[in-house]
Length: 490
Image (cartoon, rainbow, N blue to C red):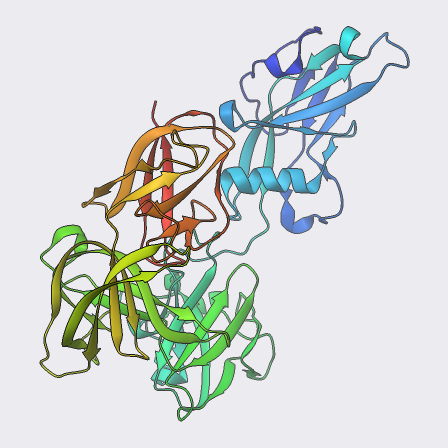
């Protein structure tokens, strides 16, 4: 146990001590602080204060003096200070925000180093006591989500209950608690469809689902098959199958989407799949004939995919497009007439592009060779494609050296397929990524968040870390799958 004395310094200057074991009581001047057990957000009401410790406050000879308490959670640059009550309770949203912002939303126990500061008196005469370090252990309220994805099983394959890639549900990559929507596009459905959803971990090494693993399947909530195109589901196979009637004459595809955080699902009939793929090239930056790279469809006003596919990728030679990641069924070929042109973009500025037509031609030609980074647009409605050369990608904003007037240009990393740069970033500033030193969405204008920058977003990307030099990497592909990382350079 470490003893601390009262002092009259600003409480932002204290140093943290070694952590005590869970349940310990630590010194708090002539008082003490005792740890509580695991704080499970699943068992806490959101409108009530959360008890994070028990405080026996230091005594003071200053009668009728103002007394306040603060709790500091975390260490070093990650530490944050909040108001705490004398009974050891703090605001639900303060604790939840710190835990999820620091450790993520996964339902695991996170051990947080903490100290309590008591301030007695007014600014000119204040006395403070600082506790030794103790533990606050908190667990976010979230279901278990399989990071390896999910599979649909059911009448679509005769209830073989085997792992088949055609029925794989993906969130597009990334943290499953930040991107909890898993979806799959199924083709050729007609008539009654019944299914359940099984986590990847429910299958053995041979791709067969073990009988004992049904308890982790996602099911309906009802004893009878749960009918409808949307609803809630059970995480532990508490109900029957999901059921819907597919109209093969009206829809070529059905997209099944499950939100694993919210416990909801939707089923939508579509006439275009969610993805097409560009494939081909001489090998630079994964531009080869073995690596299909996804282009995602825009979503129309009716909420369905509209058949206009987009992505940002490096091209290196000739290429083709196809609707399936794993085979060449219904691939499309170049049908001629590629031309170069200019147009007015989303910001009013001009951009340059190549365009041409395509068709489904057995044994048809590859698309003309290109080398460089492009915004690729494939319009299945007009049977035309557009390639917009992106010659530069940079960081703009008041967090970076050039402010909002001058970009810090990035360099293409062919091995990692990302744009990268090392530069100073300023704490509490904002940035965006943009192409060709302009604000056209056609050239690329990404904002919103580092975890998922969106082209055309009006939101800046906030930077809350301390001012310093950072390695910034930006991995563009398609909205929903773009990401950026920022790593401090020591």
